[in-house]
Amino acid sequence: MVSQVSKLSAIRKASRWQRGKVAWHFHLLSPGCLFNPTKTHELFLESSKGNYVVRSHGTLTEIAKHLVQLLHGRDITEFSSSPASGTVEKLLKQAKELNQRRVKWHHHLLFPHCMFNKKWGKWILAFEDPLNNKLTELVYPHFPEKDLRKVENLFYGQRK
Image (cartoon, rainbow, N blue to C red; front, side, top):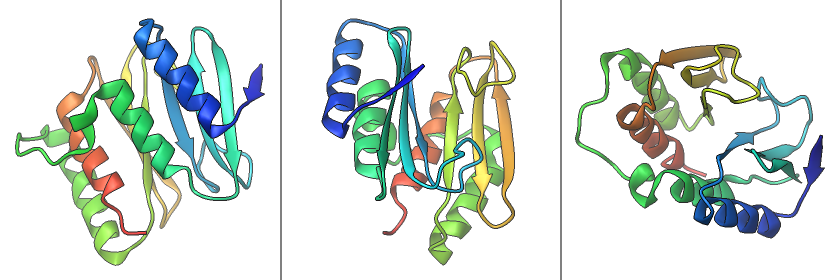
């Protein structure tokens, strides 16, 4: 069961979970996202304490940026000069090209036990190509911190 909550309630829940070391993560689901059957913007909170959704007719990117920094640390969205893995290079190149063309794109980090993860037990960095509705999944045995940092920096660097 999923309960609908406000933006503020979502932030409060995530902050409380983070302080209490509760397992949680979130998904930013735009209209047209392969994981989103609705025509609204959704921010989906998934935790061992329950699942919640924020629905909006406008973008939820700012709240997502706050939550990703809460979950992975403030520097997760900052530029890093450390090299990414070779597996993510093609994805990064595509994201940079989309950013230059001002084409909105998004991605997902699917945790090992995420409800959207079909490769249970593995970390999945998924990139949705908005030009052909294709999902590219990169599979990792561990949290892909360096690759995620590169993707997050490009994602939150998109022009509005």
